[in-house]
View (spheres, one colour):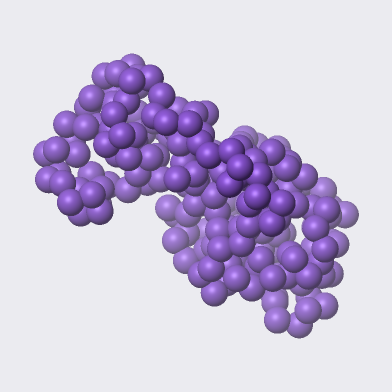
Length: 203
């Protein structure tokens, strides 16, 4: 499925994919709400998602799309070449990040990898990310609190976090309470927004 607000871009992407012979484009969307609705309806193997579309933030929508459609892999195709944007997209749950200036073969490779459950990052973006590692935990969070915050922001439950970090559920609940108290945030949506704004989802 292709989600981009420019019809010319959608037609170009569709042409590239259909000419390859290995893909069926099941739907197109020109805004974020339509992308959400069509993804639920069609359950595509791969969603090709532009970051700048009407209807909200595509970056914010990636965790929601992944939670609602866990079998759908997301490949971001964008003009935004800032390393921090790539970090946020991948941290939010995308498995691919391709620049619109890339060759057609790169896009096809990224989508093939995504369909196979693999990741793809534009080489130039990968080099930039490696050269600029994310900062440490902000606002006096401990490393463990930052881990819990990242996993919460990515949609994990307290029980899942406990299992992943070899902690008790009660300990995770305590860490979450500490994070919310330190940051003055009360909801998961606020925690997600904070983690994205502070570049915490790329590690």
